[in-house]
Image (cartoon, rainbow, N blue to C red; front, side, top):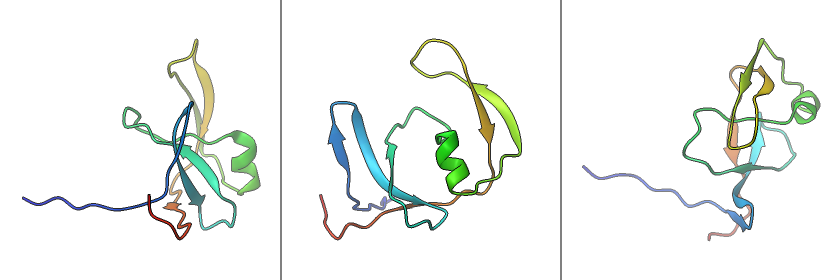
Length: 88
């Protein structure tokens, strides 16, 4: 069985590896952390409001930091890797 591959731009920093993405075809470039250990993506509440994403429920999540964090959930959010015209 042969796998598939893709090339996309990344930003490597001391805080991690980030991928430039567009959310819901917005013109704004956002930087999402590349993390294979998570089952969901998280977005700052103010950014979600700016992109007019409508929450449908609430919950909590816990990452590597201390304590749990309250979150709002949204459905059917499309993410697209931003093409900067260069391959890394």
